[in-house]
Amino acid sequence: MKSSVYITRKLPEEIIDKLSQYFHVRMWGEENIPVPREILMKEIENIDGLICLLTEKIDEEVIAKAKHLKIISNVAVGYNNINLPAAARKGIIVTNTPGVLTETTADLTFALLMAAARRVVNASDVLRSGKWGAWSLMEFTGQDIYGATLGIIGLGRIGEALVKRAKGFDMNVLYYNRTRKQDKERELGIHYVELKDLLQQSDYVCLMLPYSAEVHHLISKEELSLMKPNAILINTARGGIVDEEALYEALRNGDIWGAGLDVFEQEPVTMDHPLLSLSNVVTLPHIGSASVKTRMRMANLAVDNLVKVLNGEEPITPVQQYKETSKSSVKTVNE
Image (tube, rainbow, N blue to C red; front, side, top):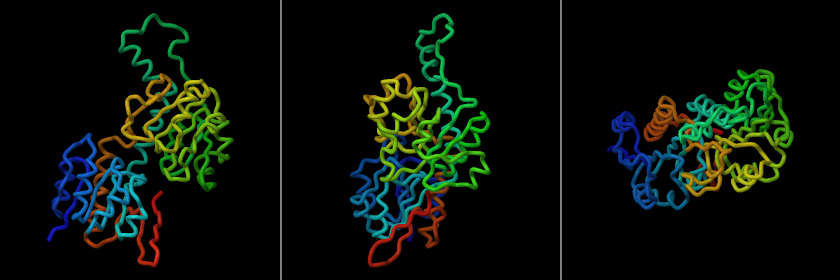
């Protein structure tokens, strides 16, 4: 008897065909609308495997409904949308898709940095609205990138890939990480500094760390006050790392020069969000990994994880491991 799998968002046909070779597959048919919670809670009752996106909140209430679930395969590097302890208590394996989106996300991060620095979106909007007048010496002037100082908070795979792009612009690269990486300092020609020093010295601050409760609002009023008046904050990590109210005030008051945001604390972001009203912010709808090649690699890795687990094998990229002890044990293995 075939196992049953539910997919929370419409995926390409070739991915569905691949899954259908092994399992009974059901899928929420909308591409741009998240599956309603009541449907998700009903579907999860009798399935063996779940493929989901970051937009789906797989919390304790949802997991409690699962009767046969063996794996939650998240199509993302992050997994803060899933209650790991609740999954561990029920012996459910959680997987993610690290590695395959590293270079694409680094590309997008540097593109966002450049767009914010050179006011690309703002200038394009002026032209398209017919408001571009005679050429003026200081019109649309931005910040230089070549030779500037880049501060990276979180030197993981994507952070390291970003360094390589920055070096092509002869940037001085500083980094702050939970653990110092002296081998990477020598290999990449970068310098470790404490967070306070990074904020004070950097022309661009890029957030590259995974979200956790420990880094919630890591960048808030105090941290923003340390940044240069001409500094630009770039966030392609997770929205919750930044206190958006504090960021809005800093940008509105000119405490920092600009920001580039691919992520928000609540997604999709509402149209009345204060940050959307500012011309010195470049905003994107969480497209860090959005190239055709990378998104397909993510989907295929999610499927491969699911196939292995439902066939009784070890997953390729597990987030957590479960052990039968008197207390549940959760071990994160992919950060």
